Length: 226
Image 1 (cartoon, helix red, strand yellow):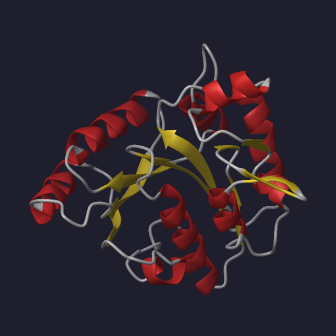
Image 2 (tube, helix red, strand yellow; image 1 turned 60 degrees about the vertical axis):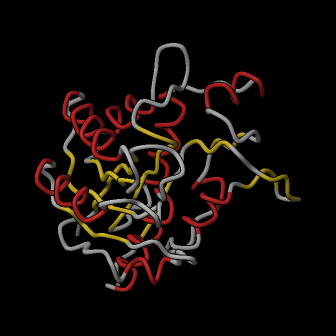
Image 3 (tube, rainbow, N blue to C red; image 1 turned 180 degrees about the vertical axis):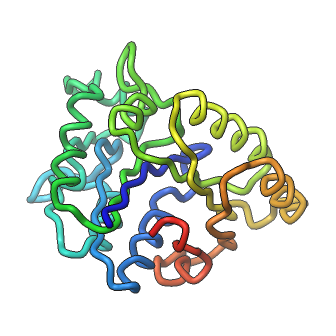
């Protein structure tokens, strides 16, 4: 069994990485080998080893056997802005082909669960013609969607699900992640999403002051994935 999935979100800053890390943690608890790749990350700190992105480091911590940082995050951009703008400003070529090659290197490890985490939402541009959705299509892997539970999430989630289907990929599951602790009618919004999204809900994660993978994992059901 070698399952591979692309993790996307309804927006930026809605917990894609914390959910992805928790899914990997849950798989490790089942004794499965895990791998992850964040093919492009924008927003990094300079270290003696080179640029390091917090999201990629969080994913690296959940990979078993261990993977080198450059495998997990082959393209790291310093500015915390849209990747295509950061790449342009930093003189870096950002293409589907380049990112896909980095993903394939991680796929060669043949982990039992491999997650590819996007950046921002489904239609984030890479260059003048390509988006991250084109990368998911190139890899031809099913998609997991993280829904940031806040005002507007129903529209964002349904549009994202429609776009995934229109691009010919399968949405295999979604996670409701409570990013706004003050959200009005959260339960009613969740009920509407469960009604309208055809894929299974893999978990409902409450707002957490410390969103640790081991805590989040207790709110997730990875059975449909593995």
